[in-house]
Amino acid sequence: MNIDKLLHIQSNKLAPQKGKILISEPLMYDFYFGRSVVLLVEHAQEEGSFGVIMNKVIGRTLNEVVQGFPEFDAPVYLGGPVQQNNLFYIHQLGELIPQSEPIMDGLYWGGDIETVRSMMETGHLLPGQIRFYLGYSGWEAGQLHSELERNSWLVSDASVLSLLQTRSHLMWRHFVRRMGSPYEKWLTLPEDPSLN
Image 1 (cartoon, rainbow, N blue to C red):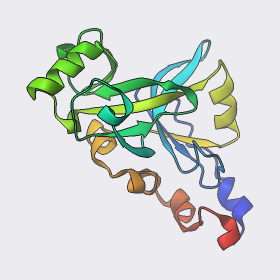
Image 2 (cartoon, rainbow, N blue to C red; image 1 turned 60 degrees about the horizontal axis):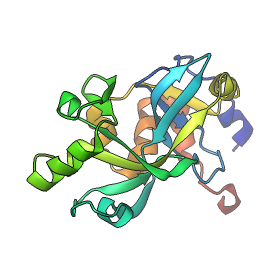
Image 3 (cartoon, one colour; image 1 turned 90 degrees about the horizontal axis):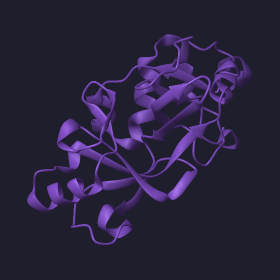
Image 4 (cartoon, one colour; image 1 turned 90 degrees about the vertical axis):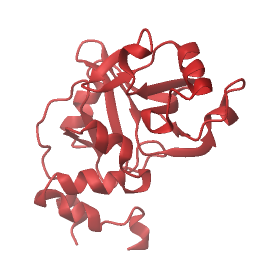
């Protein structure tokens, strides 16, 4: 199998923007971004981009990570390598959480954390409606464009449902499969080519 040929499939040329996802090429050997799916929360060519990794669960719940929060049956995710001591979140509650910023139709970024805590305590917030992250993923101006030119990422659309309900360990494969036949062979590559 010619791995170089598999990896030099040209990008689909879909432009990155807020609400799109980035799918990593299969042999990206990076602790954070290997086989990752990143939701772009913001993208501006002149100012840079940031987002959160959607499929890297850290195996701890919110009240284990942040003191003073009620028990809440939702995992915490690794959002990326930047500001890992800070908590970030996306949710489906919109204006019910003041200061939320829309990412795409039906999905929002941040907002008032005290409102989030209160909604947890009163049962008005369900685990499937919100997702928490330690850290985020960031690119300086022009950096993401350079990585796309090197075919490190594919840009794709995603629905809120597919982002929040696809199981983390299946997410990368799910979105690669949706990209169609040019990328099917990516699914046959081992995560560690030394095992091939």
